[in-house]
Image (cartoon, one colour):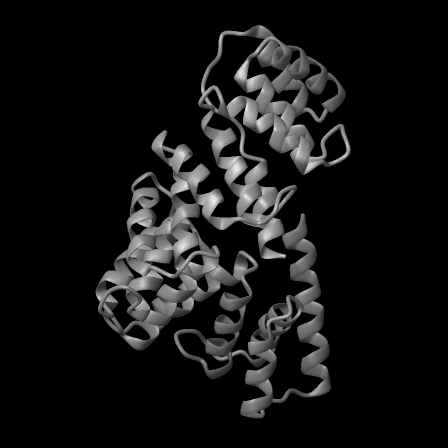
Length: 302
């Protein structure tokens, strides 16, 4: 599922830059307003004229199933035409198709080669993807040092998940000696972009005083920020500090609300913690916590 979500998200990457062709601007405007019939018609015409962006966008229509049945094979064909003209995002999307095995046999090595072409043109998402390929996530032999090299390249261009992943490498001593202060530095940089996983990990560092001065209040606040973004890890941790009154006033019902929200996202660690620690609530507390959790979900979905 993670790969599928990743692929869909990555296939939605658009080419950037200002172009003079009015037809291309009209096609993009039609795409943005979900008029895919019109956008595809114009992009096809541009593609037939050899315009790389037109070829890319025809591929994007097929890759995302916008205005046509989804067909990764046809998407690949059009991306390759654009790639022949050195189209950066076409390189990247071809890499995704190979790395996730969409329309082609899964081939992480081939995928990374295409990502390298995009990275050579400065694509930070490609740099990040290469990093994840070496970081136990992409089918290549694990090499944390190579992962770090590529994460640093992406982080230098503002990729906040790359910043977070660098923090994890230092936090757990993967490829480097464990370095809490360096982990905190990267978590902070990522958290400045409101990335919830970084907020949760940084909150733990403040709670334990690892790499930073002990600060229960700051740790609880970081957990809250992550929880409010819907992150189940942050919800679980924020529920815990509410339950024990660490850095925040103790509130058993509010704690259960966040536990329920985490479990609604299949966070088994929350369920296990409740069972293993023997935590329990009365019926009225459980009913109120469920009411609050459902109200939060309605508000968050709007």
